[in-house]
Structures are given as C-alpha cells and as structure tokens.
Amino acid sequence: MRKVFTFLMLLTLCLAAAAQENVRYDIEPGILRIQEDYISNWRKVGEISGYRIQIAAYSGVNSRSQAESARNSFNALFPYTRSYLIYNEPYFKVRVGNYYTRLQAYKDLEAIRATYPSAYIVPDKISYR
Image (tube, rainbow, N blue to C red; front, side, top):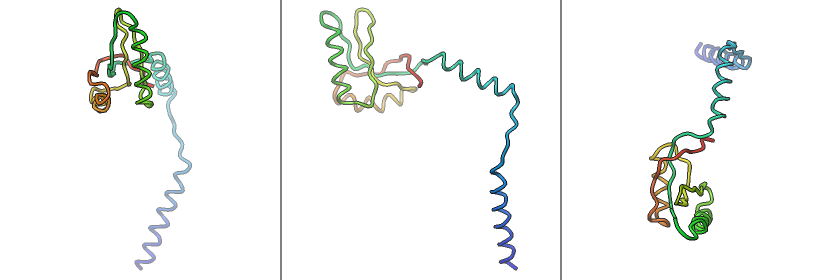
C-alpha cells in the first residue's frame, strides 16, 4: 500500500512539474508601458551619486603629465579598476573606481593605500552601467 501511495505521489509531482512548462503571463498593457518608461528614463540618466577613490591631485607646471603618469601606473597595477583623469581648476585629479556605497570603496581603498598612501574616498558622480 505504501509503495502504491509513494508511486502516486511521485507521478503527481512529475505531472505538476511538466504542466508548468506552458505558463502564460497575462500582463496588463499599462504595466508594460510603465516598465518601458522606467528603462528609457534610466538610460537617459547615465550617472548617479556614488563614490570614487582619489589617488593623486596635481597643480602647476606639468601637472597634466604628472596626473597622466599616475593614472598609467595605476592602470598597470590595477587593470580591472577603471581610472579617470578629472580637471577641476587648478587641479588635475586621478580618481578610480565606481562604487555605490562608501563601504564598497573602503574595501578597495585598503589595497590601493599599499601603493598610494595618500588615497582617500570622495563622493562623485559614477556610471551605473
């Protein structure tokens, strides 16, 4: 009797799993339109508030070449972290990473400070893609 009951339960489970292959979703057109608007609006934004790590800032004569040199040396040491050369008069700044939270940036800051001891976290606009 138990074997028959177990067999019937397994048969029922197998049939239920096979029946779920033909699932059909009825989504209202309004929801699809809202979803498409949401996606298109976020594509327009492109940047959000976040954090980066500033590893160097230079001003004066040859400041641009010094900043480019610092960026190139960073790219050689950390090839998987994006770097940015930013100009805010009178400084050329080298900032790295795209972090949503300060905690995410802090994890990489510890590794970066081994090479760049004056590195610190700064709020910045980051690419969310």
